[in-house]
Length: 341
Ligand SMILES: NC(=O)c1ccc[n+]([C@@H]2O[C@H](COP(=O)([O-])OP(=O)(O)OC[C@H]3O[C@@H](n4cnc5c(N)ncnc54)[C@H](OP(=O)(O)O)[C@@H]3O)[C@@H](O)[C@H]2O)c1
Image (tube, rainbow, N blue to C red):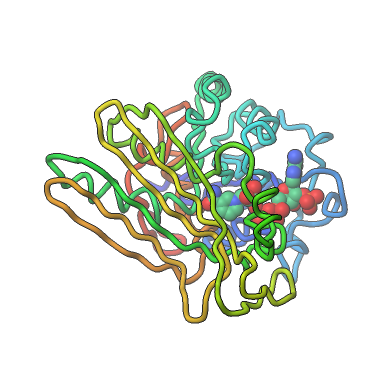
């Protein structure tokens, strides 16, 4: 029997930037509706969402200021939060949307596994979602490309000793802030001063989730960062300049994870400019019985990111109340545009 809620979910978007608009566009293409849109104060507030999506016609959805909007009476199924990677910045959005009885998907990196970042905040999100009978999930591009591939490989093992993960993320198409954030164009002294970052990178979050999802007890996560240099000049479109040989073209994040069970994991993850001919790729090597490895290439990470959110909407709507991480949703499933899984 047709279920309008499942056939055509009604979304709200909280954060009307690059991914908020991309996800809204994909929802509309599937015949779903976007019934409200929120953003912090600024020029987007008061505009029709259709204009911000580049549509010919208005949608009749005017972007509201997050601090002035009334969230109490939203008639929608699920809110998509695309505001920030950090839980603390996103918390007002979670409180407003979960409190209004909406399921929530957050694209922010820390939301992927809040328990690994701040146990008290994770408990607050879980309690709030349960109290309103709704689900909170951090859905990210890591879901399809970093988390599920290794869960499947390790899932075929009868014994497991270690995991090794390597990847290349091309940062240039994420804009100048992303490029600067990983030290593109810095010399050695500047990288030592600024490129080392503060605390752990977001990559620790999904590494922690992978080991937890395998039923292992993570006892320690270490991270260090080093600059990646190239012996030829590389042009950065984001910075609109040539990065000279010897300057940093980005950062290598090196993460080690120890578990109480003795299984170890290492990640060596490059976020940088591409050398000629390079494509984004990821690999996992599982030292277990049986040993196995895989390498995958990703050709369009912007579309992949938005698609990983939209393809989780029905899973999150069907999930039990509370904070539910993507490993509990099963692998992502393709569904034909507008069709049911
Ligand atoms: N985990 C993943 O797979 C993944 C992948 C890509 C991106 N991300 C993360 O997703 C988030 C969104 O990325 P994006 O590229 O879409 O960013 P973006 O283009 O900067 O969009 C963010 C939007 O949120 C608004 N905003 C910022 N802070 C806000 C606040 N406190 N309250 C309400 N609205 C606020 C911004 O308003 P203004 O117009 O005023 O700036 C902007 O419209 C970022 O944190 C990014 O790091 C995660």
